[in-house]
Figure 1: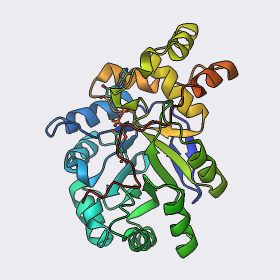
Figure 2: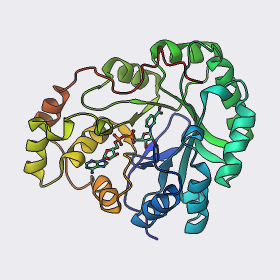
Figure 3: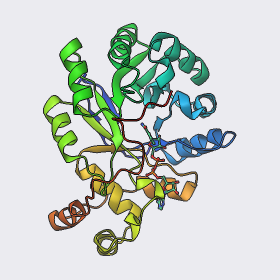
Figure 4: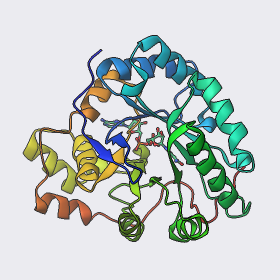
Length: 278
Ligand code: NAD
């Protein structure tokens, strides 16, 4: 199985991450193994899952069946909120489900302000990285104050912050902070999860027409040109191919600016400042 020619980005710990992968949030149980197997066949090597998605075991089976050497894959999973006080136990359980002895990236899924355990969880992730059970460590859905606390208290800067981000919710202040701190940004919901009219906006469709690409490809390309890592979710093989076919065109400055103009600072998902689900 041949890997797609997907560029990598260097993280602040010196490790490389493919700029594009496949996300498996809300993939039906029983379907994930097929989808991940197809993605690996298509040439994806980066998979984003989480304990709460309840499909780590299926991701693991697809990896095992693929026969692809472990060091050619980039596997991310995440610490769920109710496990923030036991990251060691949680990663061991995730690794067992995945059938792996390490992941490439382990993220704290949400800051969960009401719990007040994110800092302790971060210390746990630092130990997990030292033990080799995750090559890189980072966070998800962290706002500037949440990031600042981890950095101030431990001196260890997360390699990644994975946040809701798309042209309707561009997170410019957060992205600028992450850039200054050397934190790479991953976007979840890069296509706004199909919850908006983003793919029919003229700023997107006119660029698509000009380049002979689809609206989804234009939006994903906008992310890449902003140095944002993406893993759009799809269960359809032809869309896996489409979503990875982003490296033979470039949006012009004017096209990027037109899409920049779509920012409504509107999140479709939960607000990290108030999301306290356990
Ligand atoms: P997304 O923006 O990737 O949208 C997925 C939807 O877009 C799919 O259901 C599909 O209908 C549609 N789509 C995909 N490719 C398309 C194409 N080429 N043309 C038209 N429509 C297309 O949203 P997502 O799945 O929520 O986000 C991607 C990944 O981010 C997830 O699978 C998951 O791995 C991660 N995620 C993380 C968090 C977090 O809290 N850290 C939250 C949500 C998602």
